[in-house]
Image 1 (cartoon, helix red, strand yellow):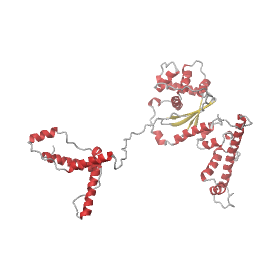
Image 2 (spheres, one colour):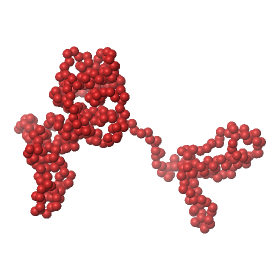
Image 3 (cartoon, rainbow, N blue to C red):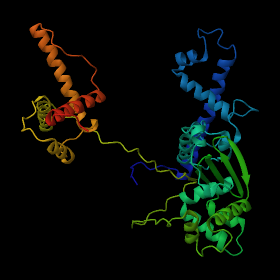
Image 4 (cartoon, helix red, strand yellow):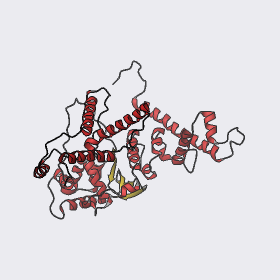
Length: 423
């Protein structure tokens, strides 16, 4: 910890209490500001002013842009007390402005289960999960592939399945307690799910969307993020949903005899090994009240590697140019004069000659396109210099045209070579 020469006269708890008070006052002030701006928007209070509307007024008088004005009014809309519009709702008075600003974009049903015990970082995690789900369209959700083995599971069982994959160590304890435990109570299950009394698990179910399973003491609620609806559950419902996972894994027979083996039977893979490095003894890190959803690994589409750009004077470019010149000379050269062969020798040579081949566009056409373009440019240059009109046809060069020309030239060369047509 950084050392300071100035000694604060009060304890940390006193200091934090004072700062919390001031921040809560600031949140209250934000609500009142939102209330007053709404008065400027909804009443005729600006009739004697030089301003046409609340945005013009706020920007000129207080340098508040349109977005900031909207945020102030939104905070009032979401968190103002309906009975006393100038005040924060009592349940939100301890949150502070930073948390309330992030909660603006959360579904109402999700805000209802949050308490001021959630830190700003934990609310940020929840907000990120919600924002991530907003990026997925309803049609994309409908077309997602759902595991066939889970078709008959209840939505609570499907959510627990996703939670168990994201938090295997917690789920191992829960399975061992529920399936193998003696005199296990629902309260014991809830304490395993939420050791500190409060816990929110984010889980994304394929073809259904994202859910938040919230445990607060003995109250269990599950919020559907997409529809902004809530379903209440009990500890008994949790146990019944786990039984659905058991039946999915091994039917009505006897299951494994340890939490790890139960987990492996349900998720059909080895229990993950948690690697821990040796570190100096420090104060244990406080467990977060939010468990993020398991992130799906997205496969990147296979893309053919793009050839690097080459400078005109690079060795690779010169080599390519040399090859192109060779191809040009090969195509335009007169075929070699050979001794006349009998028809039998011609047929035999044709059947066994593997030197002849058609050139596919993807292997040789790029060079031929460049070659043909160079040829057309040279003809036009000659016409301009000499004033003569040589016979040539101007065409749009593409790969299909180049392939046709190249194969036709090779065909003509071969026919001229054997003195007839290819069979």
